[in-house]
Image (cartoon, rainbow over all chains, first blue to last red; front, side, top):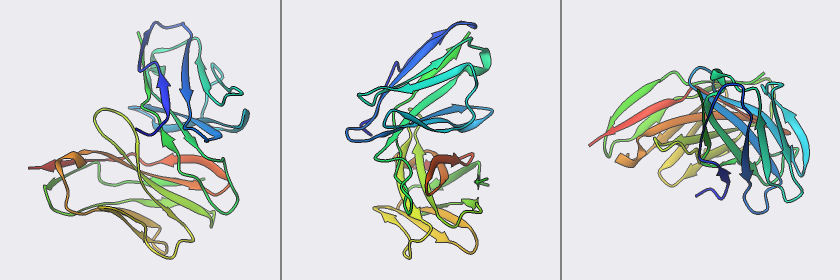
Length: 117
Length: 114
């Protein structure tokens, strides 16, 4: 158990709908990362938050948005869902978020498997 | 831009044998970190081992060791005395210091045969 929690574990929805994925980082971790794992794209970085602020953005679609709350949990909102959005969405957390001269290990949650029908 | 290449899509290894999973990387940044993660069929991503670009010694964590050859830009994972529970997908990943996003390879599916 990594200490990172994600809910829900599974989500089945229809095209055009909107869903929210939730992540709670490990105790003491300030950074939260979101990744998408799909068969055709592999594992891709979406976005990073550090202590409530957006820190880095990757291949995140405009239909997707995220935020990190004062208690450090994070939510990933996916809207106008398409079939191609079906994937395993991971949240990861680390202690800091880019300390010069070192890097922090990211610990992953169990993932949310999203199926868009 | 960073890139990870894992050239072995699948491997079959006899139980108790050692196994080496290949990983080569490309980055223009002199400061970077290399990670290996394990993804069992249940889906979770489990951190195994980390090697920093400035680390003098190869990293080891229990049965896992990282064969880091900086000049060749390779960071192969060695699993000693393989067990049935080692059957999983293994991903190599890289991040640059100060830019924490992980860039993953395509993974290697390891199957341990009893």
